[in-house]
Every structure is written in structure tokens, then in C-alpha cells.
Length: 164
Image 1 (tube, rainbow, N blue to C red):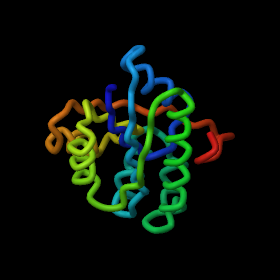
Image 2 (tube, helix red, strand yellow):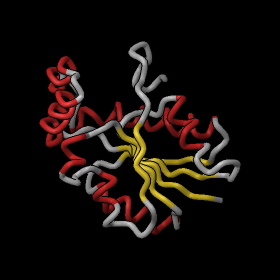
Image 3 (spheres, one colour):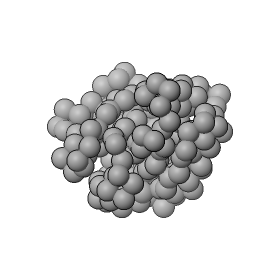
Image 4 (cartoon, rainbow, N blue to C red):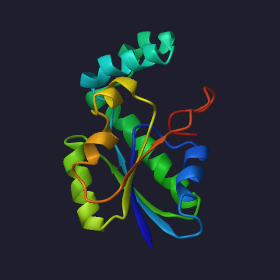
């Protein structure tokens, strides 16, 4: 069985689930999902990314998003939703919320599970990518397996953050 560590920052959409579960054709895949709650230190970078993408309204609402401890419950709900969606698509999946030192946790999970790859599923983060501060760029220097960066699909505004 092929093992992928899937790093996410938002709940998986149906399109995301289909995308990651079909990457390896008909080969069975097991996922370990790592979800990181939003942190206040990233607020400025997120706002700059929103402006770069022309999403001015979203940039002004960055302060309204839960962060730190307040982001823990939404992150748990997003993780539960994402693991269930992967399982519903026929894959083995488990996961946990990563609160501190995500790259160290990633390295430990890769070693523990003998993962074949890391998939970072994220929205575009132009500023972080420019300076190689995004998860995928930093993970490439921490783990001994291939790191694939994919862009997540947008969630319809009618969908809830955990309900899909």
C-alpha cells in the first residue's frame, strides 16, 4: 500500500478528495492527514496573498478569522470531515491537528509510517512561495521523501467549513 502524508490547512472539498485519491491510479493509498490551525503570525502574509490575488475583501477580513486556540475546534472539525471524506472514497485515512512545530511533526510522521510521499494541499501563497517559506519548500529540506505541492479547490460559499 502506498502511504501519503497529506498536509492541509482547510477541509478537503469533494474535488480535493477525488484529486488526491486518484493520483496513483488504482493503487491503494493510505493517508495520514496533518491539519494545522491558523496562527496569528501568518495574518500579514495571508492578507498580502489575498491582495496579490485581487481578493481585497478577504484581505480586510483576515482579522475576523479564528486563530490560535480559537482555531483549534474548527481545525478538528475540518480534520474529521477530511478523514471521513477520504475514507468514504475508499482510502485508509487517519490524522491529527498539529499545533506546534509542524515540520518536526511531519518528519516524525514520515519516519513512523515509512511514508512514500508528502502532499501539501494548499491555497496559493505567493509571498511565502517567493521566499520559500511555504510548507512544501520547507518540508523538502526536512523529509527524505518526495514532496508534492498541489493547490486545493475552492469551497463554494454555500458550503460550511466542516460540512462540505
